[in-house]
Length: 226
Image 1 (cartoon, helix red, strand yellow):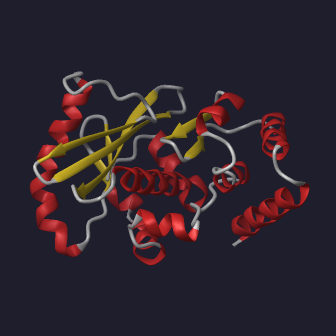
Image 2: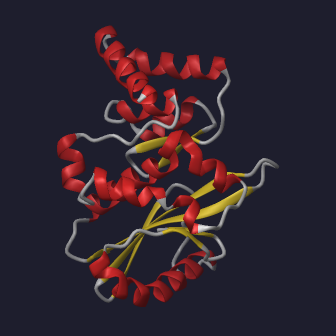
Image 3: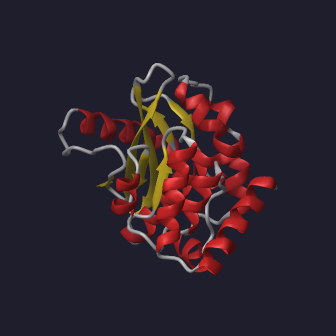
């Protein structure tokens, strides 16, 4: 689920068999988010991961600030609801993958809508088709097949592809417009200048062989043209 700071959901994906259960859990989820905002369950900084277990459900949350055209920051909660039997590392990996895919969907179309406070869930409903046809929501499968999110831009695609080569906390230092999404991915939060793009590419190239870099670059460009 993707929820605005005021509790307004802009996207939710629920398997048909779980719809009734999710409706019951939704008030609890909103209560969890309100508790975070009031500091009752500790702070949750933008891009950090927080999990809370209530009864048999684990609420895993990553917050993200998205800047409006006037430079105001809008807070969004990315939430994954799972049962308590799943490993926390698998849950976090799944949420990070899904979050990056959502932000990159259709070359960043959703982010443009988030910047202008779009609240109509229909504007984001296409992502349900992506989830249904592209991946089984299972972190182990994501890792095993090394599936990467669709690139929202060339630089975003390159960062997605090389995520295993550089820690996210290091990549964040390359440019203030780069924001970590948990421990796996880094998001390009704003448009980059040509100079900034070149600097980031040079950073990526540093620890890769020329052949590997060229292969990754060709793959990302092919994905963008598809």
